[in-house]
Length: 564
Image (cartoon, rainbow, N blue to C red; front, side, top):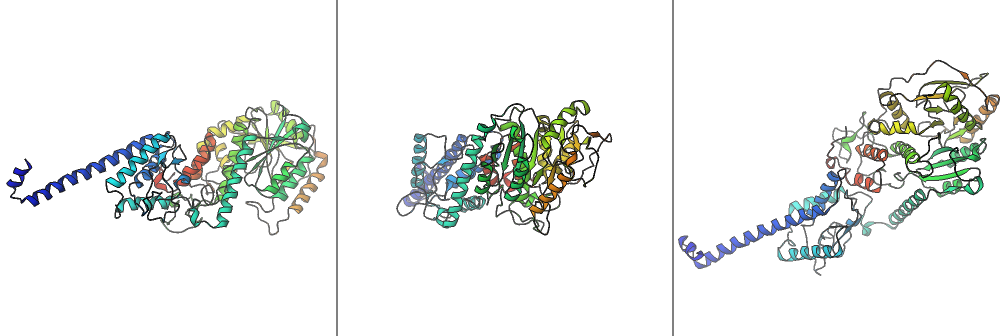
C-alpha cells in the first residue's frame, strides 16, 4: 500500500522512505508527550488535599510535577534534583516531605548538569516510588526529553518556582557558617518550644499543691523586657493569696535568661508557654520579615514586592513586630480556654496582665469581692476591669461602675470568663479582618458591631494595675527609666493604702457608653495575617499553615484575591 502511495505521488524510493520515517517519528513523539502528561495527572491524583488546602496544594503540585519534564543528564550519568533542596520546600500539600525515588540530590539551583528527580508524595510506598523512578529514567533516555535544552516553557516554570521559594531556604553550598549556626539555633528553639508547650509543666505544685477548681489564674504576656518582668513578679509576690493561684507566662521571645528567671520563681505556681508563630522563630519569612515584602511606606501604584496588593486602609504595609502582638494575644486566649489541659474546662475568671504592669497587693481580694457583688449588682457584666488610666484622685471610698467595655481605656488587668471568649470566637471573622493591628481597638469594634448583647464591664475607679512601660510599643519617653515608673506606682499605692482591701464600694449609677469607632488604625491589610488569625481562632494553626503562607506569599496563589 505504501509502495503504490509513493508511485502515485511520483516519489523516488529514497524520498518515500524519508517521508514515512518522518511520519512515524512524528506520531511516536506526539504519543510520548501524551503519555507523559497522563503520568503527571496520575501523580497529581495521589496528593492528599482537603478542601482548605486544595487551591494552594493543587497549584504547588502542578508546578513541582511539570518542572520535572525539563531534565538533563550529566557526564557521569547520575541524576540529581534540578531545583535544589526540594525536601525543605514549603509546599501546601498535606504531606510535607517527599521521596525522590532513590535518586541522588544536587544542592543548589545553579547545578546545570543535573536532572530533576520525579517527586513522589510521602504516602507512596517504597516499591511504588521505585517504579515511578524507573519509569521516569526510561522516559528520559528513550524519548529524548533529557536533551530538551531549549524548552523555554519548562525553564520559565523552573525560574518562577525558584523565585517563589522562601528566602530562608538557601542551598547549603551558599550558606555561610554564621547562617548555618543561626539556622541550627532556630531549629533547636522550635524544638524546645514544642516540647514545653506539649509538656505543660506546672512548677511549685510540690509546695502549694495541685490546681483546684477555685484556684485563681493569671496570665502574663511576655516579650523580652526582663527588667519590667522582674518588677511585675516582685509585685505579684506581695499579693495576698497569690500562693493559692496559678500564673501563666506566655512568651513570644525565647531568651534563656528570662526562662531561667521564670523557672526559679518559688512564691506561686508557674506555667510557661511559648507563642510558636513568633518572628524570632521565623526571622526571614512570614510571620517574620520576608525580604520580598514591601516596606511599610513604599511608594508607587504597583510596587515591585510580593505583598503589594495587600496594603492597609492608609496605603501602608505590614510591620511584623506589630502584627505579632495581635497574633500572640489571640493565641494565648485561645490556648488558655481551649488547649491547656489545666484550663480548657475552666469556668472561672482569668486575669490578663502584661510584662510592663505593676499590681497592687489587693488585686485578688478586689476580684473576689467584685465577683460576689456581680451576682446582685450586675449579673449581666461579663468583664471585670481592675485597672485604668484615670488621673490620681483622693476619694474617700472606692467607687465601682458599670457600662460597655471600652477596651482601649480598660485594658489593664481585666478579668474574663469563658463566655467572653466564646463571643470573641463567634466574631472571629471580624476580629481577623478588621484593619487594625491593635488587639484592643479590634475588640472595641467587636463590642460595637458583633457582640450582642454587648460586653458589659464592672470596673473600679482606683486602679489596681499600674502601667510602668516607659518604653513600650506605643509609649516612648526620652529616657527609659523603668525603676522611676515603678517607684511612682509604689508611691501611688501607698498614698491610697487606706482604700486597699475594701469591704464595700460606692456605686456610680451612670452607665459608660462605648464611643462610635468607625475608623481603624491600619496595619492589618496583609492577607497572610488574616488567614493565620482565622486559623488560630479555628484551632487549625500549625507549622504547615505557616509554610503554606510562606510558599504562597504571591497574591496570584490565593483564589480569594486581594483579601479585601
